[in-house]
Length: 381
Ligand SMILES: CC(C)(COP(=O)(O)OP(=O)(O)OC[C@H]1O[C@@H](n2cnc3c(N)ncnc32)[C@H](O)[C@@H]1OP(=O)(O)O)[C@@H](O)C(=O)NCCC(=O)NCCS
Image 1: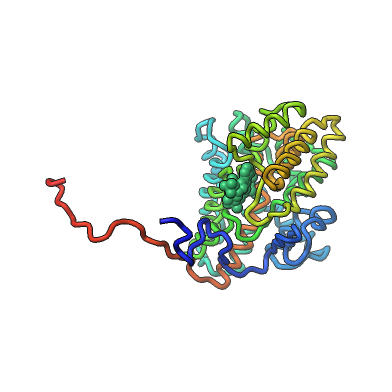
Image 2 (image 1 turned 180 degrees about the horizontal axis):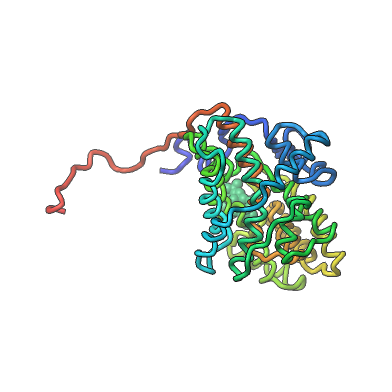
């Protein structure tokens, strides 16, 4: 039977309200996104990822003293237990960094000093959240070193989350101010986005009164797919396949004629454009100009024009993020893990919100299978 035969059923839960939140709001008509009432562009441009993380976790922007204190706590929590690196060293070299990261967070749970506290303890959850957020950049960058057969590097306490991540990625050299700012802004843009698939999955997990680490592990597993966070990697592989601005128009028209999904385009919530993409496109093009490499931006322009003409679809945040990160020299299979560095804040904020006022999330489903089937003994089957 077709889905439309059921008046209360919406495939993919499209349009279904899954809960109430005070963390972020997507305005599809205005293509805007606010975190706790503050426009994400303002946070990305004038603020820092640390301020954004504080805002998401504590519900307000920090004052100067609160921010300093928060940064110090984050810095002190940035190092990862050596045992976790030992676990990562056991993984086959082909392991995708998202799988390595999911494994690392799973293994980290038992190291948390609040491991045995009940999941509804708000303060313990905030402490866990800060530890989870603090370690993400170190895990991604040192996970990358480990799979290349290199030893982990100690994170830098005096740098921001973005700065320390880039420092390890660069093999112990600080990134320049512009690169650090771009990374920092992209983390803010990626930090939170309402009831997206991974956040919803995270809330479902903690709503059983499981714990924050389990929620984050669920989130990572859900983010990995190309219909969600994995799209930024797929978008870059596509841009590489197109290779030159001259190829772009023919490539995209052929892809659409063959009913291909174009990664980095379309969005369940934004039908008139993704505000994060608009902002990040400017940033990505600025990186290209500074590097004297406008090729990716030129290919992107053509894809955007044809996608709008032919499908009325706009790019989402993953599209400009793909070539921005590429221009910064980040390996492609680390794009979704970078998304994790950012989204640990949103997941944690949602997990805490869920556990502060919990109700088990358990929707119904419609059974379309057979009825009254007799049990046939195995010897007669
Ligand atoms: C994000 C996404 C899953 C949203 O999906 P959705 O709300 O379920 O929308 P649908 O998949 O039902 O798409 C509606 C129509 O637009 C088309 N469409 C949507 N995104 C498309 C894309 N990226 N490329 C080509 N066609 C697309 C669908 O084929 C469908 O067309 P149809 O009605 O002729 O079948 C979808 O746009 C997509 O798969 N995008 C590519 C992956 C991506 O970039 N994900 C990151 C999201 S931040």
